[in-house]
Amino acid sequence: MKKDSSEEKLFLEYLDRLLAGEQIAVGSEVSDEARAALEHARKMLALRQEPSTAFRADLRNRLLRQIAQKQEPTGRAGFWERFDSVLPPRPVLVAAASTVAVLLLAFIGVVWYAGRGGAPMATMAPPAAPSAAEYSVRLPANIVPSDVSFTVQTSLSASPGQAEVYRIESSNITTESVAALGHKLGFSGQAGLSDDGTKIVMSQGNGDEARQLTVWTASGAIEYGYVEPEKLYPSAPPALPSQSQAEAIAYDFLQETDLLPPDYQSLAKIKDETTVAAGGGYSVSKEYAAESAPPAAAAPSAPSMPWEKTALPAPPGTTYWLVSFPYFVDGMEATGPGSKIEVSVGDKGEVIRMVWSWRQMSPLGTDDIISPWQAFEDLTKGKGSIELPLDCRMVLVDQVQLKYWLDPPSEKQDFIVPVYEFTGTCLDKNGNTLEDFTGWTPALSTN
Image (cartoon, rainbow, N blue to C red; front, side):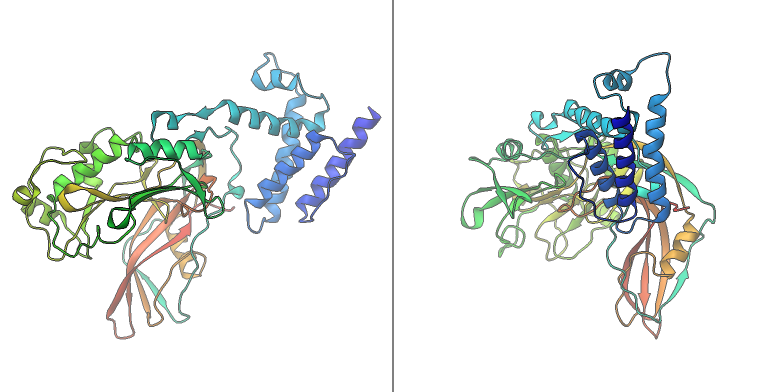
């Protein structure tokens, strides 16, 4: 008991120093279980770039509360209690035991989605939900001239609310899982690590026919396509399918490679939210689609029909169709650099490029969010992210929406949290429109 008491005291001393921002070197007198608990606390602190005093106190209290809860007797032994029975009984080390249990659950909960030959394997995340203070959103830099005024041109509620928060299930990308996907895309050979292990790559073909498959190990995001720009921007006018045919080709391509998100059971279900743009800088409106592209049956990814005879004219300069599929989280759109599911369809209906960054996730629960009006106030005070031209003098905010932020594919993201997205226009000193803008502010309440 004396030894246990001494170790408990030493554990709390290390924990308090860690929470105070000190770099600690844990001595050999601390057990492996205590060392694991301290490492768990260190990782939780690392989720915040500048952990607040409230967050540090909350983390300490939650660790100690877990310990106290483990000491309380229960009428029925659940999984956690049975797991505790095979670990050292010292109460102060229950936090360490919980960490070990989480690792065991993560190992047991491996999801072999890659076994279908589609997206690479991912592991199930542990069910414990962190506090809102642990979430962070890595928004782009805030670049705003000093003399800009903001005007909101839509009604904004001043009432706060709640929104769901999600945990991203950890990606476990291997050369084998990437090779399995590559074989579905017509690649042969093996996949290999690239860029210091941040990517796994497969290559096929030479010259203008060279293709490459890239999977980011941090997120599982996928990019596929031809290496040379000739396929996207051919020297001779391509024979393109119609807009609706391109949409069906893109959908079938994702379906055949097992890359359709679970909620996309049919094209009809998401057709209204799917956009098709003409490559070359021309946007294609719904009116254009209605006039020039009558409905067509779904075409295979390797079409055999004569496009030269059936495809209706696309806007001048079009060399490919860019089909963008919606990315929804909890019924709301996702935003950010990692929220893309895009397929480019070119000459004779060939899929020439794909960007896919959908991520498996599990709900953690709801958290309080600030009001849209408070979010607008934060944006005007430089607490968000917006990039404006130097000659912008007035920002007109036309729309404010609650969305979910997704980091770039190259970065590992642990949680998906809501943000407020602002869209509108920038005006110069004479009131002339310069360009459209998109900005964001964190939505979770920090109170």
